[in-house]
Image (cartoon, rainbow, N blue to C red):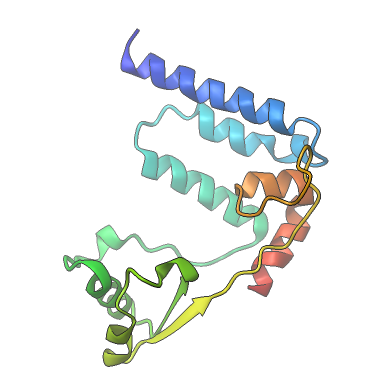
Length: 160
């Protein structure tokens, strides 16, 4: 068995697992094509595969944010300085990060560079999930789409 065959088998097994886990979700048939497209994609470049998936979900949810790849910006610093240099390169004056950034980035450096630092304290909306006695937050966008549908998920995105 070649490595490509092994990867394809793993991808198909993942797809089967998603089908079994979510087949009874209310919006499964409407959005399963996202999982099929992702796991049947034989491109070995994970970034390209992930970006095709992300861009498809963005279109579905009506998100029109421009995507800029850091690799196109010719910035070679590290850590917090890398973030600051990327922000400056695109003309941003604000950096919005998740609460998980506390502890690994140097917050004071943003202010020194005139960049406003905002923490996004996302409160995950809950929805009914199958086989879960209580809501399990932080799962895949597919989980949210399969159970809540695009209109509901889009409303969550526009509120944050």
